[in-house]
Each structure stands twice: as structure tokens, then as C-alpha cells.
Length: 205
Image (cartoon, rainbow, N blue to C red; front, side, top):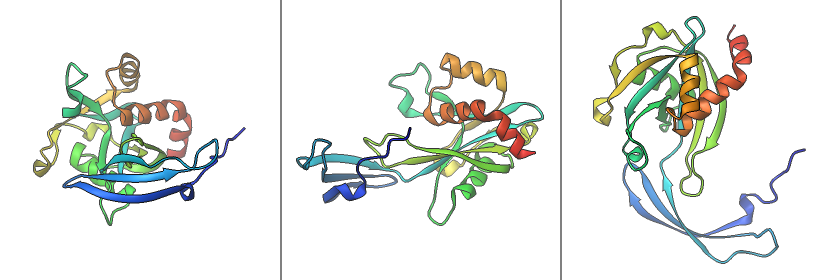
């Protein structure tokens, strides 16, 4: 049984937008009214939204070695709740104007891990935190040669310091179960792979 949304964008009235900050990211204050489940319209709702654009997250896998290529880097936002703010992640990047999501996957794979991709496949997409940001992440799977993944990578102008890891399937699964991997994009990408592994590998062949 499918449940269709009762409302759409047409059931929201945007009264005002006010740009509070305009830098690398943007912060915009919205005043809106929307239809209510019980009927009628809401009072004016004020919300600040973090406008950071949209992004890709990429999980490269080598079916010959049965390894993932993951990356490790410092994340300031993890310090408040983690013993270590160096996180094990999937390759990721913002979708720049004029580029497709697929273009960014290839670009980031080279910049962050020094690898090439084949059989790039869209897995799913999700809203990272729709109560506070408009960002949507697009998850991709790709085939790669993990033996080429090594060293430290990143763009100096973006203050990136990225360590590349070749991670066996079993280890990645243990890290999921233990919480060693605890950021949304990596969790979703790995869970998608483990749920759909047979189909993914078959499609690559």
C-alpha cells in the first residue's frame, strides 16, 4: 500500500525571504504559511534555512579484492559528540553549477582518492536534514581498482587533508555495527550496497 502526500508545494505560501548571511554557504530566513491536516492554514512560521547547495556521495567498490575505498578526514562538527573528529567517510562533494552529479563523482574520486571509476550507478537520494537545510545528497555506487587507492589527498585551497583506506567488506560491516562509521552518507551508502550487492555486481558484469 502506498500513501500519497496530501499536500504539495502549492499548499505553502512563502511570504518573505531575508538573506541573513551570504558567504561560502548562505543562511536565509523564511516566513511561510502552510495548509494544515485538520483544515485551514497555519499561522506565520519563521524558519532559518542553511543553504549549502546539493551534493554527491560515492561508494567505490572493487569486486576483485572485495574492498571499498573509504576516506578519513577531520570534521569540526563531530567534536561536540565524538571522541575523535576524524571520520571514516565515503567520497563526497558539492555539485557545482554547470556540472552533473556524475561529473562531480569522477572529479571527487580523483581529487580525494586518486582513483578512476567505471559503472557509475545512482543508488538513491535523501534530504540530509530538511528541518534546517535544503541540501539533498545523491548516493552513487561505482566499480574501481582498489589497488590504486593509496596515500594522502585533497585540495590545498580547500584545506583538505584526506587519508585513503582500502577497507575489506567484512571490516566495513563491523564498523557499521559498532558505530565506527557514524555519518549519514557513509551509513546509507554502505547499507544500500549490502542490501543490493547481488544486483549491483550483476549489473556491473
